[in-house]
Length: 435
Image 1 (cartoon, rainbow, N blue to C red):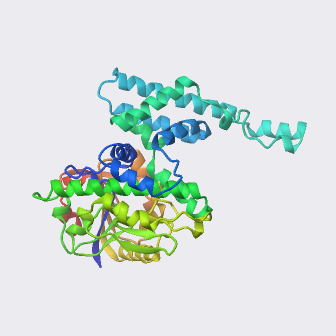
Image 2 (cartoon, rainbow, N blue to C red):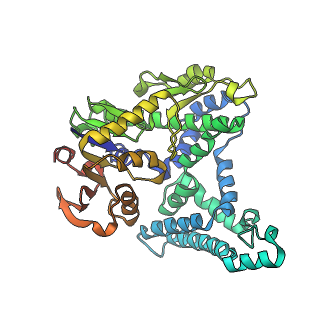
Image 3 (cartoon, rainbow, N blue to C red):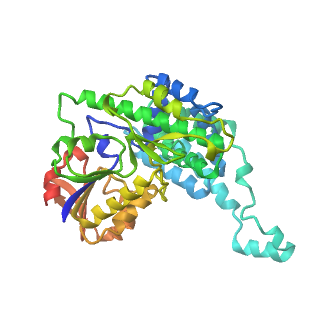
């Protein structure tokens, strides 16, 4: 039996590393391909004939698609924006007022949907009066065919454009739901199963752009911390075993024990027709433009009309689907090995992982990992939303949690789980792993 470390995106958000979290990923990627990554983006686009995808068009399409969202999604946007408003210091500021406008408009859309819904009594009356064929619809108004007003569209476009150009709580909250690159990757990846060529091309483009951004960001972090000890990672015991949900190589660079990249990593790519997993050498100093020209472009072939007869290479970044796509047989072995590490561990420390539904495959591994002690560290570990997500995995009701102090930090505990509200660099990781 041994101790196990599990790291999520929050670890790489640590000061001195500062990788973007999901809500800032697409805006920072957009900035990258318009700036220092423009040359790489140009090479990738040139390798994909007939590519029509553009991030600006994607934003406009997402705005037009808002009316297709159900009332639960619309209410979720309202909640996200209201939560963002609470973080603004000045409640009378222009930003706060804009946030209230957006929350109100989405709330009105949700109310229209709710009031348009046909209740069971009316549904039965329609069947009796006109026949079953007239009782198929659940709504009086088909929201999919309703258009947003030009004013509402302009407000949304202005807010989302701000998220691409400059970060603020309201625009980031909107972007986290409407400009979610993980959801975008999931939608496009399905093209490999449905055989739709233009969707496959979009996935190849988006995933390689994301890879290029992450590799460049990682290289910048490694250069800036070359003369310094890297925050958090430098304090890890060398013989540690770990599972990371991140793509970066930071963890593997600092521990000698087994490290599993559950969602894949930056240092490999996949040839999709053979499912061959290929290494990318010297990732910390790689010239990504030359890599695009010499390895991505020659390994793409769209000359056949049938997707399944084409040749594609994609980064080894596994989309966070609840049902994991198998990019290569290696991942079946990796996920089985991750499950075994969790089951065999005596103590598990989880840092910077949010227990999101999109990672249900990994959540299920934790759920079925057996009876062991968990220390879970995240800045928002005591928020209602985090506790609800965590509670679904470990079957712990919020009322069971008791407030306590661990290592001088605020914590809540219930049975075998302790929630510590802290950043990765605020904890004594060796003490948690040993204790």
